[in-house]
Image (cartoon, rainbow over all chains, first blue to last red; front, top):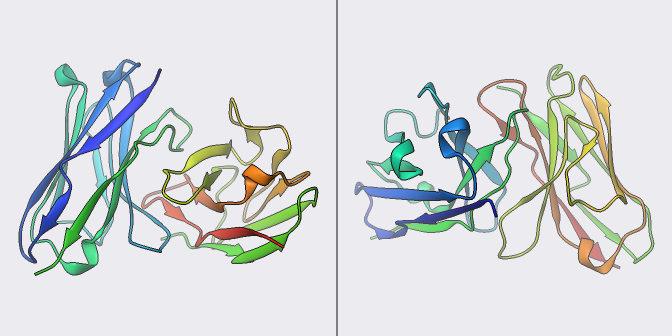
Amino acid sequence: EVQLVESGGGLVQPGGSLRLSCAASGFTFSNFNMNWVRQAPGKGLEWISYITRSNTIYYADSVKGRFTVSRDNAKNSLYLQMNSLRAEDTAVYYCARDPSGRRFDPWGQGTLVTVSS
Amino acid sequence: DIQMTQSPSSVSASVGDRVTITCRASQDIANWLAWYQQKPGQAPTLLIYAASSLHSGAPSRFSGSGSGTDFTLTIGSLQPEDFATYYCQQGHSFPRTFGGGTKVEIK
């Protein structure tokens, strides 16, 4: 079964840092491009980052310069290093595979990040 | 950035109704359009990709159409498990963008 499991969320103060992880299983992780998508409480979906199999990377303007995406194919894992966190970064963060065709499938269950003092 | 505009933002319907949701892109995205369903407290799941291709495991009552800038998601006969929020997403270019969502509620 293809599965993505995020971890690392929690409560952090404004200006702080957090590192999210996404553990992949059930497929050959190194063969797929991956994404991070977030959803603020009660709001819609916002794409924030994309990393290809060969480590080409794209970011949304809202996180560029503060967030860094990376992957470790040997560990079947995707990461999101989040620095200089702001209240508006409060959201559930999802990792999602891109099965070619520029879509998101499947999604992990999400991990909640709360930025508050 | 490509803006995705969904309408309506919410719709009230009954079991058995036919429901249509539209999504308009601010520029031509060919058929790089996907639709997702999200139930409360759950992650989104893919329904339709490439504008009209039904994702494996998605019920056949869901269908998608359109190309260029105008797209439609149709639920042929609404079932109790279809009450959820639906999002469109463009895969034409970065940044990837989503529509604002359409909440399908019970009438």
